[in-house]
Image 1 (spheres, rainbow, N blue to C red):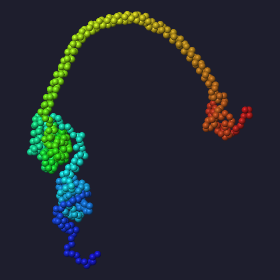
Image 2 (image 1 turned 90 degrees about the horizontal axis):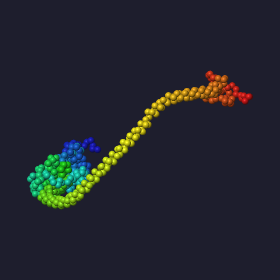
Image 3 (image 1 turned 135 degrees about the vertical axis):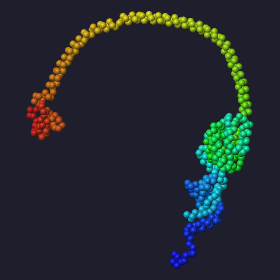
Image 4 (image 1 turned 180 degrees about the horizontal axis):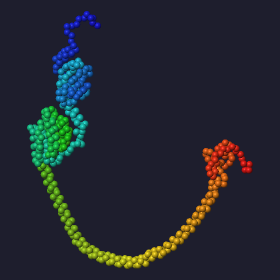
Length: 453
């Protein structure tokens, strides 16, 4: 430890003062700095700023992308991405840590636009916006074609020329929009939505002429891709030249290599259609003439057959009249026979009228009733006499009658077992003696066998 006599320097710095000095030195000497490294520890809080660490195999440095810079990124930062950044070095005073405030980010080995293209393509494909099963067929004979493009470009002139040459009857509805630059993507998407819901167009062509990758970038915008995928009518994408590929091509129902090819794809050649219709009309006329001639010969043969048929019909009419007369005669004879059988049956029924039999039985009923009553009385008297005799026999056999002659019934207590022998009871045991009237409770004093037994 320093001794108590040590003298202090003239100026003593605070931590904050030292931190500000270091910060000023860093910002003065490292105002414009380019770095290369791998993104790690990426964080994106709700403020919109991005925080991460840029590292190589030996060292690392903290990196900050403020919200204004993060919004200008055309691609999404992710863990493990190799990037080249430009920024200024500073020091974060609350923690005393130096960090890089980034103004520009470029993926290493691949352009920012290309990376943004691949990232958005992968995400939208995962949502199903590019599924082939969702593609719709282009109408064969559209009446109105909608076009989303710039009025000043060559694309609209090429499309109009091809449509006028191939099919002058088709109407053209143009939604003029800028096809490059800031804000153009939103206008293109809005134009596609407007044409889709207006109900006046059968197919929409979205496109422009050739240009650089940056010039065509509006057709890679997510809003444009979603508008094309959500369109209520089929959409044809015609962006740039045949070698140019945009996300609009993947979302559209049909991709044309150029705007002129798009116009050729959506409308047929009217003169060719008229020629084919004329040829079809001639073939139909010749076929109808041949058919009419064949039918004329068939009709002639049928008319010849009708003459013989008329004779046959007349013969059958005569035969039918004869058979009708036979049927009428047979029916008359059958009715006469049935009437005769009915009269005979009526006589037999009257002869067997049951009223006579009923009158005889009515006289017999009182006699039978008297005989039945006499037999019933005799039977009841015999039954009463028999019942009385049976009751007398039962009474003589009843135990109660025996009790009336002075006998009793001995039973053990408390189970009520009947005593038949002297051995059924033991000395000192309580017994119940049932008399004609009432019971006696007795105690056995002696158990002995009857000498007369």
